[in-house]
Image (cartoon, rainbow, N blue to C red; front, side, top):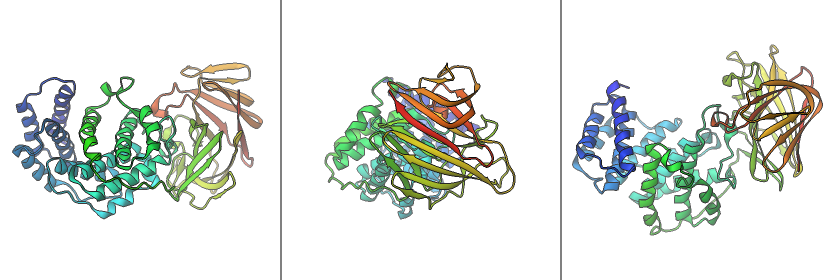
Length: 451
């Protein structure tokens, strides 16, 4: 990246932000940004700039302008070959193909792009959803059925994890700190709107009302790219209504592990993941992720699982048993965790123990929890509080919106509690609860919903 290109990116976004706010933008300033793209040494930055300006030109009805076409053809020659193992590369090629679609040029569809539709790809949820919405736009504006099919496959994959709230229950796949709720919300909203228009899938309607970025003032706070994509959606929607309806297929991916009841539900994966899984109650996520954590707590690179991930766990009648490798301080890592999860309507039980091949390290089972407060040994701790505590107890009460979640342990245990304040760095969790592993013992927890 050179300084010039970086500064130009900021100035282009500033210009387009003015446009999105209803202010006039000088054509000469946009042309100056186009001129800077040609001299940009980083082809990925060049594509990002071209992509934003091409949406602006399309919205103005100037998508085939000579200057834009000249720059687009130069940039296309500089882009590295597609790497389907890297979502950033796929995203870049989709952006470039959208530029071509908006200016009525031919677009190519590499067949190997279909391989990105996997559960492990959801660990980069915003990128995957953005690839889907870009593929929808490319398909709509260029009448390309292959891009529409790819976009639909991704949308249907994500639908397997959608909650009634509109949240996508894949946070256990995410590394700590790599999740932006608002960015994901807008991307999923655009993707699902296009999917619904092209399939008439009425199941999607209940999600759209919760995801709509025009409600609650979100639209004015999101970045200029997302705002422009929302405007492009307004142009694409009427075209969608003229296209033949696509068949829908909501087949569960083979790597998905899911137990659903009228009360508790549990979701996990046989593919790459960070947390062991997630826990919900009546459609609301309570524990977005849980997994072992090498002590001390607070070092995010020591939370969760490492490859290889178990692919042959036992799943039967509301019970899941599997081994997974634990992240470790050294590169090899000598710890493996066995988890036994039993899920029913009224309770969910977790039994876990560690097996270490070489040496023992101190580890705890960490639950990221959502709730307004926690009661332990007659003392209440509030979300957003500053008090980090160690309490010996066998029962924990978590106050939810209108119910109390009871966590029972099989014996008195020194539990560490850290308030989090619901920030998205920790997947919008409110608390960390850490239960220490004891050598040679099974750690047992039971979650029961009270009134």
